[in-house]
Amino acid sequence: MNPSPTLKGQAALVTGGDSGIGKGVALALAAAGAKVVVNFAHNQAAAEATVNEITAAGGETIAVQADVSQESEVKAMFAQMYAKYGTIDILINNAGLQKDSKFIDMTLEDWNTVIGINLTGQFLCAREAAREFIRRGVVDGLSRAAGKIICMSSVHEVIPWAGHVNYAASKGGISMFMKSIAQELAPHKIRVMGIGPGAIQTPINKAAWDTPEALNNLLTLIPYNRIGVPGDIGKLATWLASDEADYITGITIFMDGGMTLYPGFADNG
Ligand code: NAD
Image (cartoon, rainbow, N blue to C red; front, side, top):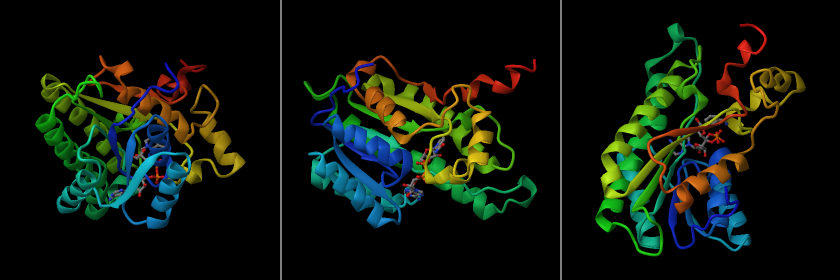
């Protein structure tokens, strides 16, 4: 993998780009030359900090607020992006959250919130991006594809997760969503891919790494014996969006230090 494939001149949108993995991806895409829209839901200060970091490093970027589960806000966000950068070349469907509880205690509101942001949010953003990719087509000299969509999934696309059924269902849903639109959009020269992170050190899973006991417990699930960092995912997203990955579409790449290798079977099978 080339550590710095060029995305020069391409316009990218990263949903939830103000924190964690999204921020890591936004920084990496900007470092590879993309103009980056940093979407945020509520935390304007965090989005501005991301924008300032990219600008200080010589990159081009703006922050745009939108709740990705709301159709009107998604449309307004794309309109702001087109007003600034004219088009979109790369969509990183990253925004997501957890609302955990035992299944029998789970409220409909917590089910709907997680599905609405993690899955419907990806539908709304991908649909807008795909419409623009098809309208504009391939731009010679910019990229071999008319557009790239990267869906942030999870190892919970394939690993069941008791106590987190809304989250696991949203990620399982992303798998078939991603593959189905990859099949439908490939004739338009649009590539659609998933990234399935394992444990990445971000605010979403702070309880799993912020004490030595919690981290040790987490590491029993990771054969490679380290927690991931947002920059790991940033490198993969940058490569997948680049022409170096031009023959890849319709798959999820797991980046998880071996979490999907059923580590419990290493000495117990
Ligand atoms: P995070 O909490 O740091 O970031 C989540 C981001 O989503 C934030 O920027 C937040 O503002 C944004 N967001 C939440 N609701 C939103 C909404 N309605 N509209 C727009 N943005 C919204 O957590 P993270 O770990 O960086 O998570 C990013 C993605 O990676 C999520 O989809 C998550 O499921 C996935 N993921 C994370 C891990 C991990 O270990 N950290 C593992 C697998 C998958």
